[in-house]
Length: 382
Ligand code: GAL
Figure 1 (cartoon, rainbow, N blue to C red):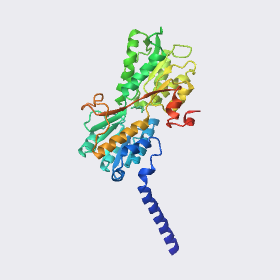
Figure 2 (cartoon, rainbow, N blue to C red):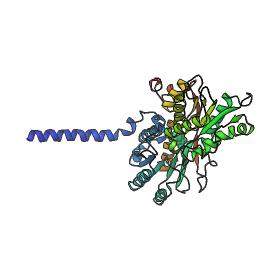
Figure 3 (tube, rainbow, N blue to C red):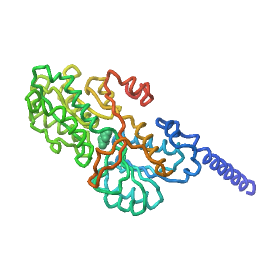
Figure 4 (cartoon, rainbow, N blue to C red):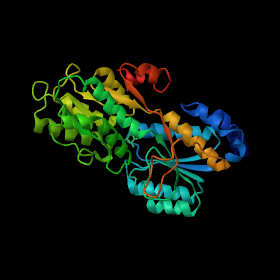
């Protein structure tokens, strides 16, 4: 019996030693996942005192690939910089859950909040509480609207994302030279996501003149942002809307020609691709379809010829920028900002950092995504 007790004690002691040494080595032992390397550099040397500070990271959903990636990148990058991280996902776009998670982050002592909102309008109350507790808030990727609690905004150049999609279609359809007319349909994202005002309006800034001149025709007549919005950016919803468009307009490889579908992102593009594939389209007659994010499924579709392009937004770059922001805020220095005029959340301009999006397609996915270590070849092949 005595022997047993001392054996247990020894195991507990060993576990304790392991735990203590593990804690001490934390700042240098992390940073192995993508996005970690630069974050370590951003942290500066003062990781010991920062180690006790806790950062809340609130992501909108587990159901789309990009947010899982964003969350993981943020967590590993912040940990590499010496911070404790409370990472939460709002289930499957569940607004009350996100609100209560943020509430918990505030009451459990997070010193900065990084939030990608499910809905830009639903956080006013909880963020008033953050402000009352002097907790700075960084809006991550999506601007949080109508609250003066947002301190900084880090995102990609969302207008540019939209214009890249429009310019792509203009280029492949050769809208300035070809006779046309070309048939096109439109899909954008969640109506509560402020980003669609930039994605959709940006794309339309390029395409509207061709709709006006008749070079582009939208047979369904559905060209208004809120009419073509997709709740929750859901692939199922975009698939069923595309199915309706197919039956009501008679689109098919042998029927009414569909030349292009402007989709604001990959999850909506994937639903459209599924509907068109089910309707008999093959890579030889597929309409041009745009997207955004370079999701694994969409990269596969691009390689298979059932999506034409995507916009690559390297989540490692965004995560690293946000780590720099957090680090500067907590150390009392100036966070990186490169835009002071574009993003007004209804209470005034929010100082922003805009990362640069890049066009992705079957032609360049290897150098863009594989060579940079974003994906492994086997992730996107087969
Ligand atoms: C947007 C984001 C896009 C896309 C979409 C759906 O706010 O900027 O990259 O992922 O949400 O999650």
